[in-house]
Length: 212
Image 1 (cartoon, one colour):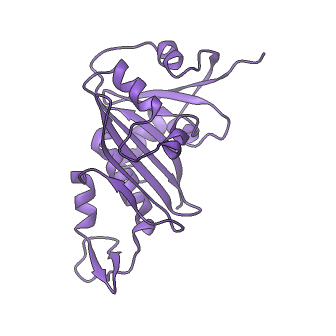
Image 2 (image 1 turned 90 degrees about the vertical axis):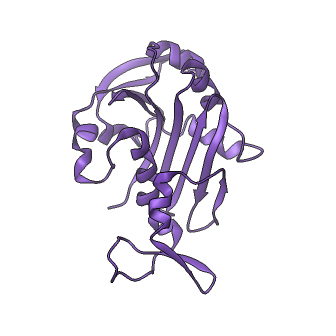
Image 3 (image 1 turned 120 degrees about the vertical axis):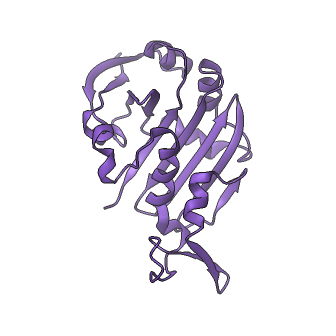
């Protein structure tokens, strides 16, 4: 099953900040609450909305690429995007983790920031090679342990079965990497049986731009 997702996670923020204040920090003060929804419906909403929910002491924001697209405009992958800097300022000491995937090209990206500094960045697709910065995360190392270099290409096993062949390119491991890294904070793996509470039972509030 293919996935499209754009998710920003603030790990155990420790302090409460009202959602209108978060939106103002993003420069989206004209956005208004329109309805409640679920992660299944809003992680790739296609309606220009910002969706905010809370899961296991984390803040989860689905932004329809409104915020995340700024990662593509950074001068260098070791820099933080404006929204990351804003969230780090609102929630000092918290990890801000972005995870994006688009199944059409196996594009996946994840970016980790803390206290206004980049800790890790990686992106890859079927059309572009790996671009990365920072030390690999523990969650990544688990996946890289199922890979080897053959004829100059890094190939992966789809699971830990010793009889499984190394045959998957890095971009084809999109869900493993994207949702595996997101599990760092969420504690559950999206697209697996363990995600039912997160996907269907957690309330998200949808904010959309107010009509003029």
